[in-house]
Length: 92
Length: 205
Ligand SMILES: [Zn+2]
Image (cartoon, rainbow over all chains, first blue to last red):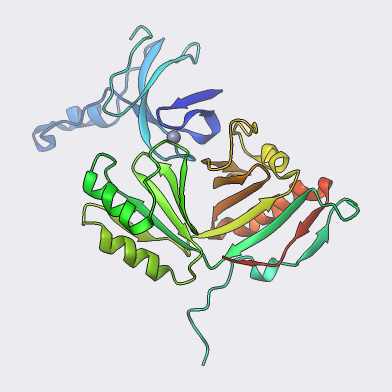
């Protein structure tokens, strides 16, 4: 399987590392959260069937983190972008 | 007095020059060597910062290679792309402090300049079967029209991160972490066995 690093282009899956959900935003004031809210931010994730926006790292390559829109049913990757880019395509 | 600054390759005690592997009638398919005494300095800076661009140009004598996987060369110095904001300056100067100081003097404090000369072991792989040997190990497109002289790619060989620089169609430099040097050396010897290979004397620079 090939993944397109936004800089290096198509490279083997073996060079990449999955780094989690790209839609999670760190709370601006963690001290104001209840333990449950903090637990939700830190640990609880949705697992929808279909398209996910994810963070990946080209770990054994340029080492950059980037965003990928991946279908977890078909493993199709619709788009990859630098962390400040916005993902296109798929049906997310 | 012992010169404590004398540098020794991680492979020094494993290194035997000679011809090995399959019978090749004096025409080894692969030549292996260690390049010792290089200066390797990592540079990280903002690619859109004109001050940084000018500073590197004045210190290195060449432009920063911005295109992913490209290399700029000025005399014996190479500036090698590692990532969108990181490069590796390599020269055949045995005292790495000189290259580091030159770069640090040229750049302001928004630029990271780090001497990593002792972090890597640099192997040179050449010969008519050198490309074939790499194809056996790394999940990279090694087609002769794709991975051409002046290109660089960081990838994996036998579970190790390795930065590969294509010097000419049949010559490649491999940068591996020093502690993985023996593993990579043994992998390369094993992969070269079927072609017959020659281990040359350690290259100084
Ligand atoms: Zn990359």
